[in-house]
Length: 212
Image (cartoon, rainbow, N blue to C red):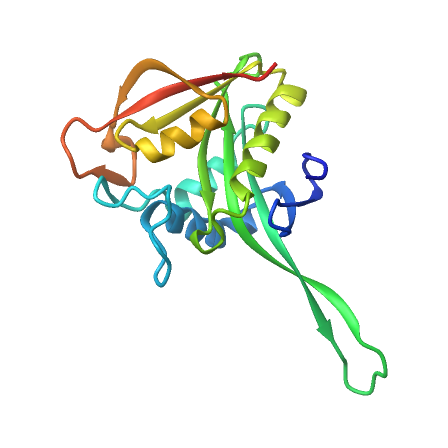
């Protein structure tokens, strides 16, 4: 893989070319769609492995909530996205030569969050990949960029995840990324979300990873 930094191009293990940057307000509508696809499913594709179908009802986030996240202090919260880059060959009327331009499509996101500008724990969440492009290495790239940014720019030394405790397949993937269970459980408080649990006693498992 190539460089793992913001505002740069990176190629996945399957050869997909991506561009990595911080999300902006103009991205809200598209980003909202991709995030909800990842957690609630996308018509015409198999259920994503991040799905919460049968566990949680309602949207994972809406545009208003996403806009609030993007307006937060950039020293304590960042939403990072990746765009899929595809070359588009164009021939303009009267032109004798072809020109190649880039077509960019938002295909994934991740959020980093910390309590204050001096906190050394970084909470990683809002992890999403377009279901039609999962298993292409995009998720690994998002995590590596989020972790690298938190360590290098925020001096955070520990990554924190909150994952639904019943999602063993997803937990196993995080374990493969060197996150370890702490034994801490956090109740799913739907009053603070745009979604609500479909099963009783739904909770999040807390996972940790050293970033140094």
